[in-house]
Amino acid sequence: MSELISFTHACDGERLSGVHGGGDGVGVGSGLGGATVVLLHGAGNGSHERLLPVVREFTGHGCRVLAFDFSGHGESSGALGELSLRRRFGQAVSVIDAHVPADGPLVLVGFSMSGQTVADLVAHYGDRVTALGLCSPAVYATEAWEVPFGDGDGEFSAIIRRPGSWQGAPALDVLRAYEGDAVLAVPGTDTVIPAAVTESVHGALGARARYTRLELPDAGHRLGEWFHDHADDRRKFVTTVLAALSKSPLPERS
Image (cartoon, rainbow, N blue to C red; front, side, top):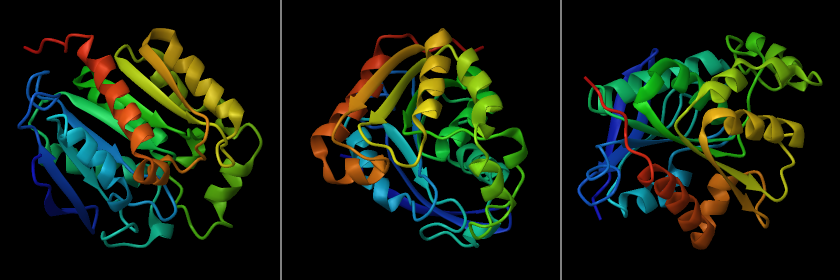
């Protein structure tokens, strides 16, 4: 198994911390078109460290993998309250462009809030994105994108607590138009993401994507923590993502 290499990356006035490695086996990072798996953690106390067992599961299959902490999280600098969906997107683009081979295919795996970030990246990178892994994903109203998260009682919180605010989320349109491979991991009990949001993501992915829904009946919302502690479900998720990808040829690039 390839050793993970730690890195720091200057972006957006912050110092972002992460790891990368793999790509020396028979998996996505080598035999299936040189794709890089990018793992994006959720909000709150999320960090790439919590996702390391998932990272290692992918590298164990020979995949090239990249994971990092958004500002205000983990070992990265910055204040969480100053982060926003827009800044998350910009930080992800900067890290990917610095650490993934130019024009190389991408497999995007997002947890919770990073469901939105994954959709933003799909809109940005287009057909470079060959597969998605969405774990109890969130999507947000247009007006939430620029607003700093604050301390939980500010404008961002007011927007996302408004009933049905997510229904016109641009992320759903992006997922509806996406034609690659996708896996949606759904916990049996999710006290954070409303069931209607999950079903809307389900419907959007079912429109054009080659789509698999993975039910995890014993899990709760925090699937990063769940996969950290439950190797069988972690392995099932990773192999489902890779199985979906292996069935479809990666797009030719000029």
